[in-house]
Length: 103
Image 1 (cartoon, rainbow, N blue to C red):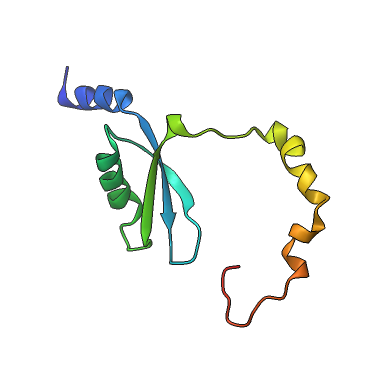
Image 2 (cartoon, rainbow, N blue to C red; image 1 turned 30 degrees about the horizontal axis):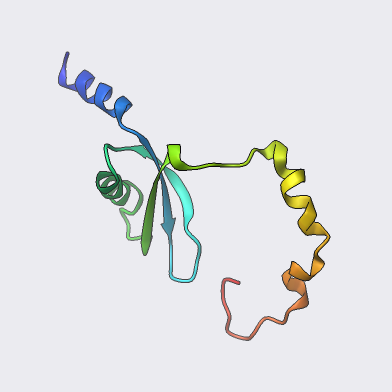
């Protein structure tokens, strides 16, 4: 087996990690991509090298893809329609203080 084939085989056995970057303080982390790595420390290093090459972030999260539980788009109605009846949860009823960003 050539070294390229061996490396490709190893990467296929490594778990998939999802990468989230926070671009600046006060903002939420956003999903930026995925990568394969043998463990969390290497996933963090690879994420830094691949997704923050131009200092575009202040924080990185790496999460093993197998540990993520997600809803299906088909479940949207059951999950989110109940919130539509609770209009007090919408921010339109609250004044936004001057100087508050990213609300």
